[in-house]
Structures are given as structure tokens and as C-alpha cells.
Length: 225
Image 1: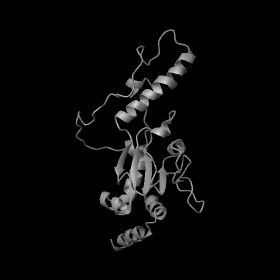
Image 2: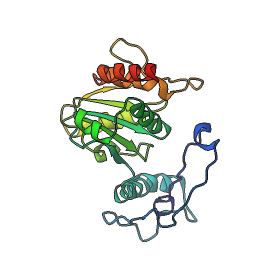
Image 3: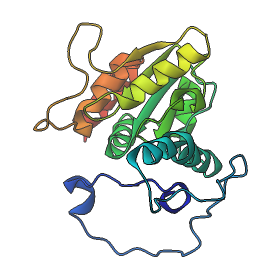
Image 4: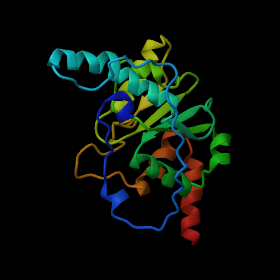
């Protein structure tokens, strides 16, 4: 994406994901890269050149680089439905390590792919986080969802994009919950020192989506172990 669009591309490094070791087999063909077919790069390219004033650089970022990055994002399907069906009643949208926390929480509740389909629950993983112009309109439509839970760290980047996309589609957006639950209690930590542990997620997830029975069964199974 960086080479194609000329933008800086980075990823966030957390101790939970890098302070570990493992033996893995890496297939050099595991990633199949697709060149966008719905975007045409300008003849002079996307990178800086001499002379290149700051107004020209800014104009290129907005009119060329960001649309190129979005075209790459669409062509390579960087955002993916990881569990459940697209027409599920409830949706969890998450990103990065938060996705792993959500999956661990669902595993502790005994919710696999088959159970997620039965419950009407879908998990959507975001691969490109930083907002770009008109990004929300490119997100999959939340129509048909009764409620969407956004699990992300600190600032509500994804939440704002989903809200903007719903407004742009001129439809009625589903309820979105992130910062507080129905009793005004924080759903997820916002400060740097706090951590979102998977052990906290089953209770929040089961309460949010009406899966109290699943949570009680999970707790009873733990007591029997």
C-alpha cells in the first residue's frame, strides 16, 4: 500500500503481541496482492519531486494518495468478516489486538462459528484504521443490524467512520455502543495505563447481546472444572 499510494504505512506494536516467541512455517505465497483496477495513478506518480511546494504536496495527498490507498484497501479486502453472517442481527467491529481479545472472550463463552450464526452474531475485523476522506461510505453497510458494538483502543476512529457511513447512506443507523453501557459505566478503558483484558469481555459481551444464559453456563462450567 505504501509503494502504491505514496503514503506512510505503519502498524502499532504492543508488548502483548511482540514480547513472545514461536516456531512458525511461513509460506512466501500466503499473501496474494491485487493491484486496484478501479483507480488510475497519475502519469507523474504519487511521490514528491523537485521542485515541490507544500501546497502541491497537500493537494496530492487529498486528491491522489488517499484515494489510491482506499483503492488498494478495497482490492485486497483488508477489512474482513471473520465470524458469522453479513446479515447477522448483532455486529462486533474490532481492530488489532482488540480483535484477539474479542475472539478469546467468545471462545470462553463457547461461541464458535456455528454458534455465532445461530445467535445472529457477526465479528468484523478492520485492517485499515486511519480515517480518510469519505472512508465511512466505503465501509460495509450496517443496515439490518439491531446493534453494533465497537471494540477499539482509546479514540473512537472506527466508531466515527461507521456513524458517518450510516449518515451518508441516509438510512437509520443501528445503536452503537462503545464508551459506556446502558448504566453509564465504561465499556472499555480509555487511559494509557488501563488494559482491556479478555477476562472482562465475556461478561460485557454476554450482557450487551442478551447472552446472559450463555454467560451463566460458562461460569457453571468453570466451577465444575
